[in-house]
Image 1 (tube, one colour):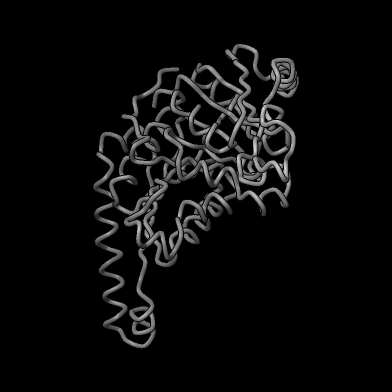
Image 2 (image 1 turned 135 degrees about the vertical axis):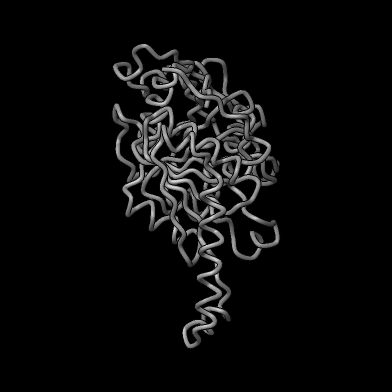
Length: 310
């Protein structure tokens, strides 16, 4: 997996500083350039532009050249100089809708690293989570870093869990997971969660025939999962396969916690838009609740992973 450009948006919160440490570690590991970005939020809603509510000129909402330079200097002070020795770092200031500006800048990045929440709970309640908005639109791989994630160490990834639902996007995400595990000499766990309809679960609780159906699904999923990884890859990389039954996001979170995973890799979308409309995105649930970083990819964002030489 070739990473040449790492983008890390920050809002000067403790959580974004935590995410920045991970971005620095990845840039250092991959010998990539790191861009630290701050977006000055401009509320382009009807209230902000209404003369009766906001009599000040619209130009007053934008940063002056002096203010832009002040924010750039603040980015420099926010970025730990001792941790970035040997890493090429650039600082950028943008203005506008925070999520949209991040997504636009990510067009030229290989990986985007950011915290899962912003400055305050009130801001998230009113504006929604910037991380979740970016999750649905990011044009490159996105690594979200929760507050509970351990600080990155020399062994950046020791155990990677890849969630596979046999959709096209999860197969492409598997390429990322295999590449990362190989480069980091990490253990890789391939996880598939069998979702059993409630009616069948209730039937299986009282009927042996129902339990046979579920076990057949497990065996079929196990064979498909094992076939995804060629034997030549297994020689170089320790690969485990796990089949669980239940709600996908709950099982992904449980397995990642039990395995003390350093990273969860998955596609942002599952089988169908209709399912996401009613059930919600599995990736969204995992990103919200995971205690370790989560790497998500979208179909149009996937680039063919290539082994990185250190």
